[in-house]
Length: 439
Ligand SMILES: *[C@@H]1O[C@H](CO)[C@@H](O)[C@H](O)[C@H]1NC(C)=O
Ligand SMILES: *[C@@H]1O[C@H](CO)[C@@H](O)[C@H](O)[C@H]1NC(C)=O
Ligand SMILES: *[C@@H]1O[C@H](CO)[C@@H](O)[C@H](O)[C@H]1NC(C)=O
Ligand SMILES: *[C@@H]1O[C@H](CO)[C@@H](O)[C@H](O)[C@H]1NC(C)=O
Ligand SMILES: *[C@@H]1O[C@H](CO)[C@@H](O)[C@H](O)[C@H]1NC(C)=O
Image 1 (cartoon, protein in one colour):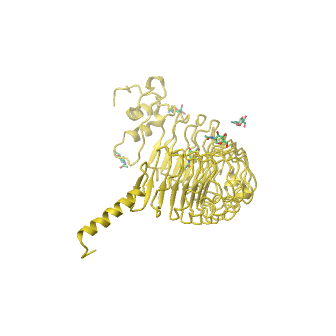
Image 2 (tube, rainbow, N blue to C red):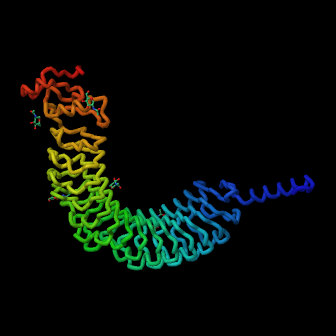
Image 3 (cartoon, helix red, strand yellow):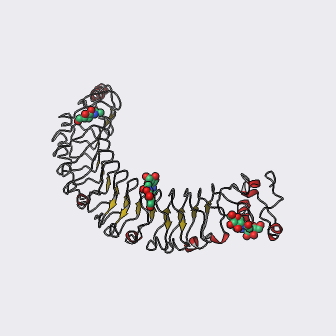
């Protein structure tokens, strides 16, 4: 604008500023550099239309909007639209047709019970769709067909119990599908079959009872959560076609046995969570094919009592083992952990161990050891542990432990238990010189 009279420059500038202001309804905050607008929790019941037509991000969450109708037709540059926490009961058909640039659409916490085919027509760039918390009892097959680039689909907290075979047809890019907190009694295998790029499938908190033959048929799957269902049966070939699986969560189900054969398909598995099941034993070679397993958790199993000495054979990559809060585990076989050359973190908290032998620990690799809340008997057999907890030059991190018995030492911290070798040599179970106040 060099050479223009200063007066004109001012005039043009003032004009621009006022136009910009005119593009922002008073209840909203707008940023014209993006441009974006936020009208969150301000009690509006319609989509305001007085925005900059170049708007890229629009956040209308936490209002009382019940319909979008034609309101968005002028905003064809939108990339992100948040309408979550409103009272939408329908999107209508074709009302988002102008949004060919839209990448993220958030519709969680509305009342979208019945989606109509065509509701998402035109959303050719959409990558994320959040429809969670809507109370949908079903999802008509053609509803999702218009979004070829969809990568993340969130359907948690609805009332879905089945899906027809074509529900996901055309979702060639879908990586993440969240179906947790629905009413599924069976894995919707036929519908999932179309999702050939799927990596993460979440089916937690449903009503699944069985995993039948070839239940999962999306070969690209790497992460599967099945926690908090009622699964008591897993067919030997249930995981046969998902051999790239790395993370599996089966916590909080009704399994009575480790599904040894089914797990044997999963040679790439690195994290396995089996807590809160109805196991009574970890049998010999229970995880024998899981040579890449890094993390294993078997906690809070109310009936688990027996750990076979060879239960963890083959788990040569295991770094973190959590076997905690199992009230019937009274004995840790000496050989159990010796098969684990990489074990770094061992959590044995709150079992019913009365003693632990020094020879049972994988000393070569262990860096963290938690034995708290076990009813430990402080006698000469765990003097090694007392010495370990007392040592200041150790690289092992281990919280101090309290003795549960004998009566005289109850509540005493084990690190203060300083029995004399001579006492043990003499066969004394209880070092008579120990007093709680002595270090
Ligand atoms: C959701 O819609 C159903 C009918 O479709 C209605 O009965 C219910 O009251 C609505 N819930 C809310 C929170 O608006
Ligand atoms: C597995 O599922 C349980 C139960 O829902 C959950 O608490 C835990 O965080 C999950 N673990 C992983 C590693 O996802
Ligand atoms: C656990 O298994 C036992 C018998 O194997 C059965 O009686 C019990 O009902 C099961 N527990 C649950 C919660 O299903
Ligand atoms: C110490 O107590 C444990 C658990 O009761 C017992 O198995 C062990 O034999 C005892 N050791 C000694 C030296 O008395
Ligand atoms: C710690 O010191 C004790 C002797 O005080 C010694 O026997 C032991 O090897 C030391 N441990 C480490 C890890 O340096």
